[in-house]
Length: 105
Image (cartoon, rainbow, N blue to C red):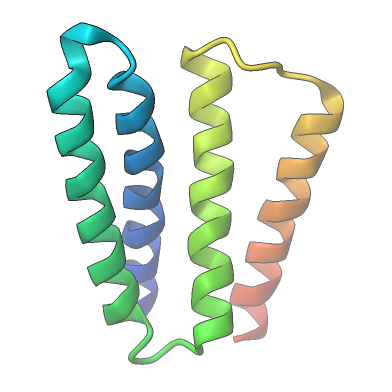
């Protein structure tokens, strides 16, 4: 169950930068900030739950990896962030590191 908590924590980790990005638009100002704060709280709580069974270094690296890679993809798909080969290669290395940590656990 700890890995499910960690996966969910990583997904909620994507929610807070997304909420902050949305809050830059006046019509989403309040809902974006509220969404970001709720995502932060849920992400942190789920990370705490996961760390009961998963070592802190592994949990933190996986958590930030999911958040970073997911936020990158959201930026490319919905906000026009650059989609260069080098940026995708960097994210692929992050994902590869996360997979390696999971397999080594």
